[in-house]
Image 1 (cartoon, rainbow, N blue to C red):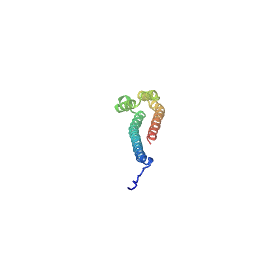
Image 2: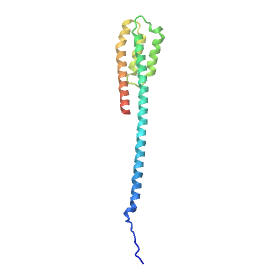
Image 3: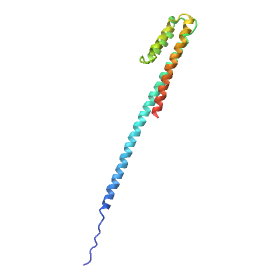
Length: 153
């Protein structure tokens, strides 16, 4: 009778497929987590940019209304009490503004100063304060817009 050859497989070689499967599973899980995180980041960024775009449109509309109101306000010979568009511009500004804005009350006072100005000297007297408040509001909103865009990046 011949000697039977026995082949023994080292036990550590049995662990190789288990380790390989664990490494593959870990790689897949890590890829899924990173993909999910990046997708969420992109969604937040797109949302922030859309809000920033809407804010830019709002700022443009507010600036246009402010400049139109100011132009009516200082027009010589224009009777403010009979000019419907002048009132519309003032109302549009009030509606576009947030009543909680720190400059809202002062802006509103300037609007009514223009509306009550009959003489040219009163019209021109109301102008510098109105322009300064408008510039302050628009600058603050522009800075907010820039921060929103920067946070989306």
